[in-house]
Amino acid sequence: MKKAGLSFFSLILSAVLVVMLHGGQEPAGRPAPAPKSVDLQRVDIRSLPEIRVYFTVTDEGGESVTGLTEEELEITIDDVVQPLSSLTSAFEGGTFLAVALLFDRSGSMKSAIERTREAGTAFLQRMSADDRIAVFTFDHEVRMDSGFTADRSVSRLAIEAIALGGDTALYDALHDAVEVFLSVQTPRQAIVVLSDGKDTKSRMEREAVLAKVNGAGIPVFAVNLDTAGDANNLRDVCAQTGGRYFEAASPAELLSLYRTIADQLNNQYVAAFTSSSGLDERFHGLKITFKDPSGESVSAARDYVATKGPGVPLETVSGFERKLEQQSLIPYVGFGLLFGLMIGMVLLLLMRLIRSDVRILSPAGIGLLLMCLLLGGIVGAILFYGV
Image (cartoon, rainbow, N blue to C red; front, top):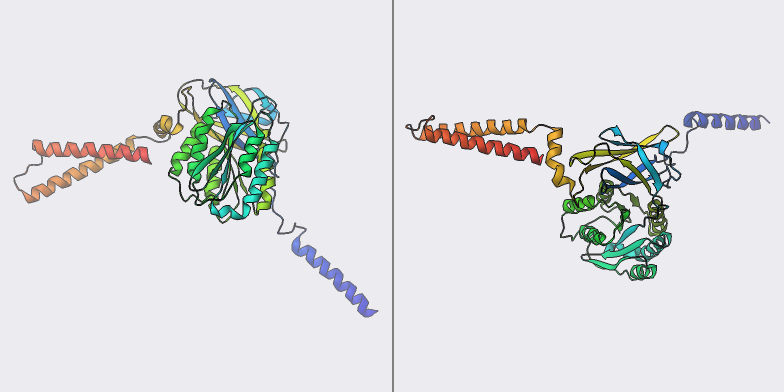
């Protein structure tokens, strides 16, 4: 009896110690919920001063937030709040979606080829009847297996025919896909790419391709099947273009991830407003903020140039102007002039040491100093623009 009482007391004491040590916390292995997010897919400025913004809002579990109201949304341009004229569902608005499906068929995808076909087919089933789908596959070469079409049988046959190849030309595939979007007239566009992110064979440079994708305003959604691959590369491409990045721990997860991407594209919002900045051909910063009823706020931002010029890349139109807004050119040029003057003086002193008859204030000496000053100023300006 005494032993039984002692055992019961030990059991109670052990339970109390466990509670004290863990403090009622959740198990360490349970992941913390991800915050809500806003993904800004497109800023349509073709009808300036009216702007239409295409975006999605997802919850902690990555599911699309539907039923968004104007009171939960704030859009600013250069920190000035823009009154909304409308907020609608892009899907219900009747604007069809154009999606380019890019499938990596390089040797590293060998174990996932069957699941890839299943995921691609499932994506087609989630799209509406009016949406246009194009199918690209790539290894060391890029192949458009079917152009933009609403005929699901054509797209399905292209996906079912995916076969393995050699190296990976990811950037070439993105470049070629953007070119084909010129044939579809819809503001709802997206690229969905399945790859490990390792580019081993592209002819195109990464930065040039990203500039082209950004200039076209097409968001890239990427599914990474190899977490040991270049995940940072894919994640960066998605972040820069307003898309989203996903990781599949195994080929079995591809099906659900492609369905998630399809649902997010189908649940796009479009917010319309008249810009307070008008059509001034200048650089502007647009920011969209989702204000959750719980008090949490999440934002996304995008830069644009207020122009109706077709295909105007932000980098070429406003790069230098933005530099002037953020910092002054004068210190760079001034440093260059000072450096040039010092070089000129050193050269004259060296010449004086070699030949005693050389005069610093002679026409030749002054000409040398002026030339060094000019070259120094040019170098300073180049440094300013290249920083």
